[in-house]
Each structure stands twice: as C-alpha cells, then as structure tokens.
Length: 387
Image (cartoon, rainbow, N blue to C red; front, side, top):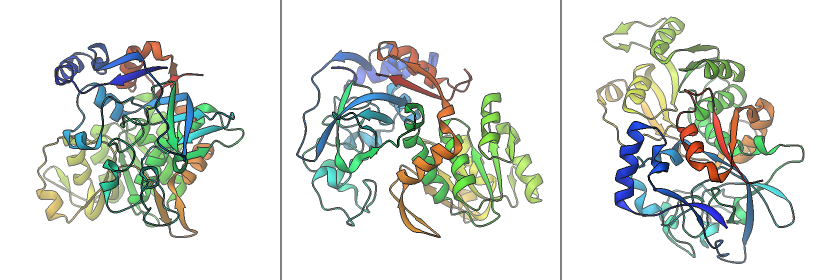
C-alpha cells in the first residue's frame, strides 16, 4: 500500500527545522516524511479490524512533527517508523463508513479498562501506552503497529470504531475528531451560566471550540481573537459574540467586563480562556485576560515555551490542559462519550464547511504546506483524499 512514513533520523529532523523557517510545512520537502510502498500493518489480535482510509485531516500536531518542532516529551510514547494521520474517516471490509477515535487505550493494549464503559482516553495512568501487543504509541498515527490515516490502510481496535451516521458526508465525518477535542476543551473550561469566555486563535481548533462553547455550555459572551477575515466570519457564524484582531483582545475584554488596566494586564477579565494557539505569547495573553481565580485551558500544543508565571501565581489562575477526549460528565444527563457529543456538534454546527481543500497523497508536499499556512491562504482544514 502507499503511505507517508516518518522514520527516526536526527539529520532529517534538523533539516526539517531549517526548512520550516523558510517555508512553514517545508519539512515535507527535505525527506522527514516520505511517500512509500509498504506492507499493510498486521492485525494485532482478534478484536482488531482493517480500515481503508477515505479522508484524513492534517492537523497542527502533524505539521509540527513534519517540521521537526514536536516536543521531545513524546519520544517514549511514539514508535518508528510510523504513518501519521489521526483524523480518519475510513471504510470497513463490509462497506461501513467509520470514524476512528485514535487514542490507543487500555482495551486496544489488552489491559483492563478503568471502568467497564471507559472511552480509550479515560484513565489516570498512562503506562498502558507502552504495553501490550503494540509498539509504544499514544494514538493511531503515532504508532508503528497500527498505521495511520496518511496511508491507504490501517488497523483499529473495536474500541476505537464509530460508525458514521447515514446522511453524514465524508467532509463532515473527518471533522468529528477535531470537534471532539474542541468539545473536551470547552467542557474543561467549566463554564457557569452567563460567563464570559475568550478563545485565542481561530484555526480549526479555535473554531470548533467556539461551536462547542456556544452549543454545549451556558456561556454568556464569547470573545475570539482571529487574524484573518475568513476566520472572523466563521467565528461569528459558529457563535462568537465579539470577534477582533488578536492584538485587540485585551481591549475587547476590558470593555465587556468593565475592569481596569494595571501595567500590561487587566485587573479583572474573562471567566475562562481557551488558548488554541500554544505559544509563549498566547499563553501569557490568556493569563492576562482571565480574571483572578479564573481558568485558562491549553488546547493548542505548546511544546517549549518561556513564561513569566508570576501572574498565574498572583491571580490564582487555574491552568489546565485539554489534550484529547474521553468521557464527559455533563451537569444534566450523566456521563457521555466526547465523540458522541462531537458527532452531534458537527451536524448541528455544519462543521463540514471547515474542510477547505482535498489533496491526493501524491501531492503531500503541497498539502502539508497548505495546512501549515491555512489561515494566510483563506483555508481552515486541509485533508488527504484516498477515495
């Protein structure tokens, strides 16, 4: 089968980092990821299923990996060579279309789940990510044993399989995984009725978070920092009340909350902020525009950052991560899988419209560069099309 493959070669990582400084996504042009003909992955056990890829998205963590910017923290949790791609819509041998929940949880590794109905991402100990019949790997798309969505075929455990509802298009289905991450971030913000929430960044992850905040929480006002015109339009359509240039977020929050300015920070601020960017500057901004004893949720992958955390300490701000998804505990209705909420959100908010461009796998260099510069090029989600 044809697939894009990443191998552990330090010289290529160095070259990718250098190339990405000249052209975002440029790591794809120096050989860190290569298109190859490889054998399909073997089935690790009886509860595993072959999946033929239809569409697979290119996300920010994928681009960071290709450009050599991914954190070294993940090295023990990844096995090489691996086929990237975790935003997967595929087809089973009987023709059933499915979405993959990519986390390789306890069940996939032959371990007892923390609860009988646990989602793959649930649990309080990540030791299973390096155990069982698989090579180490936190997700499909980062594990040598499973393959990934940037290849024509992969294998998935039954616990990862979600049938696509009749009538849902492939473009809608490929948005379910990123939408699930946005749902999880929105719920991690612990919004109370009438709260003011800020979302920094209006790429795919920022936009799906706006949609989730508006439809799944009792939020009052949503403020979004969006750099490009199409992002501002989509943020408003998905439920944002105030959409401004990133440099104007502080001023917008100050006007809304009636707080004062002390130095560079606000005396008060939003009740919760979701940082969907993940840079030193964005995390600092998130803390500065969140009120004392408010909550900052890190959705964007931060990697290495440099921060002055005095404000976090002084304002007693909660700083929490929102990596993937699992089981959510809603105020009404009891526990529910994040992916179930994501399927509903994609349909209700018409998130299929965020898919901007499809590329064949042969054009992977152009596709990855397009994804790396999606905002500047009036795009949101770029996907590989195997159909």
